[in-house]
Amino acid sequence: MTWPLASLLLVGAVLAVGFAWYERSRPPARVVALVAAMAALAALGRIAFAPLPNVKPTTDIVLISGAALGGAPGFAVGALAALASNVFFGQGPWTPFQMLAWGAVGVGGGLLGRLAGARLGRLSLATAGAVAGFGFGAIMNLSTLLTYTDASSGSFAGITAAAFPFDVAHATGNVLFALAFGPAILRMLRRFRARFEVTWRPVAAGTTLALPLLALAAAPALAASPTGYLARAQNADGGWGAAPGQGSSQLFTGWAGLGLAAAGRNPLDVRRGGHSAIDYVRAHAGQLNDTGELERTIVLLGAAGVSPRRFAGRDLVAQLRRRERSDGSFAGGVVLSAFAELAYHAGGMSASASAVRRTRTWVGSQQNRDGGFNTFGRGGQSGVDDTAVAIEGLVAAGARSSRTVTRAVAFLRREQNADGGFPLTPGDGSNAQSTAYAVQALVAAGRNPDTVRRSGSRSPLGFLRSLIAPDGSVRYSRTSGQTPVWVTGQALAALQRRPLPIAAVPRAGRRASAAAAAAAAAKSTRRSSGAASTSSEPVSLAVLALAHESGRVMAVLMTALT
Image (cartoon, rainbow, N blue to C red):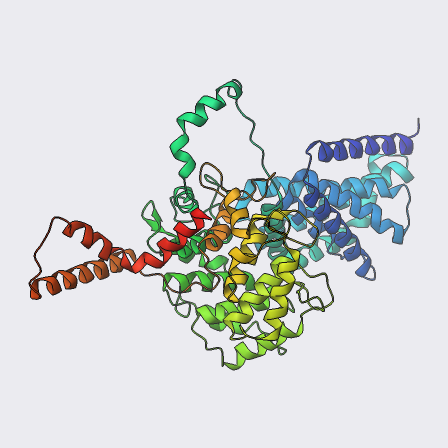
């Protein structure tokens, strides 16, 4: 057997093991689609930079995919990118080695992501890119040795020396690309994975037979609320992770804080370990870099009654305004632009402000013929989430009675499923987050979600209530319990019939003071009128103390009865 044949067989075996590893991990369908998309992007990046020898973003894209999605998906992205791009460059004995080299980069990215976790930043990615460039070159030098020479050590030294300038160019390009866009792609992929991936926890042996007894013993827990679930899921640093016990992040902390604010709890008052939700956001303000994070944080601070114009030494509203394009859009996206309107409103900007009017006009111009919106603009398939956020943004910008909002509401009503819920895209199954967005949009537009029913089915609020688990969390769908903190936070706001942005919630101490003042005033009035005290006075005082929350309490009671 010749060296070239033996090497190809060995590489083929390694590739087979890598793909088997990926398949055995049983990735969700949406992660599979994301892997395919990143492989295509990596292949296109190689083709686009073909005129520059060895300078291409492919290695960085593969490395970041591994760091965000894991070693097995990273291997698949790298191997598929090599195979796909060689349709353009030409297939040959080098293709398996390129698949192996970029697959190894993906595995290395997975290891890096596991070791560094949330600390993985721009400089770390750049350093890893440089190492990956030389590592890729070493594997390709070895392939040249085994395929085209007598496989002697002297030949390998000569090949390495001749290839060194190209390897330096590869590593340098990787560093520059990582510094330019590495963190942005990493954050994007981590968000997708947090949204799409489900972790199934097996039931311990012997538990199955005990489930009926456990259910009876835990009967009081069935009344657990989403509000209580979020309060219990808070970490000691004041933030939240995707699920109880997981590390905190700005994304999950923001949505959990907004859900609790909708339920009447100021994020400043929600504490664990002496730290509030706002304390966590302030301590990690350096992570607020992209447009979506700025927008969500401004809306959260507005709900807490904290000025986003003087937060952690930054004017978040001014920073957001600097990202607005000349046409009024933000990154040319409907969702980012609509959330900017929510952030402007939460930041105290009037609907008549020129920036608000520009963005409102741009969002309205992106409406599709069916009345819906697509996140990337007019012409793409309309989606429920995109349309609902557009409605909330337009209403916040003063366009509640516009024809645009009326048509968008009509689109939402047409897309309701028979179970009362709403899908992410038309024709899909219902999920809690899309349903929550739709409910908030309907309320913002002045529609009663209880009256939105498909062929006499349950209402969207009824669908959300049906997804509440015994621990108070809200499941994403009938078959998935992914990212329960995120889902519960969004669903809680909808169950409370509170659209975004949420007005500043009174602090707990101020509510108590207001209630005490009202009670004292009532007692003084009774005395001045000569009314005698009775044994029912404590009850009367309690009623007065809770009067300021009567609207919210009645809404909860009506929700429970319908």
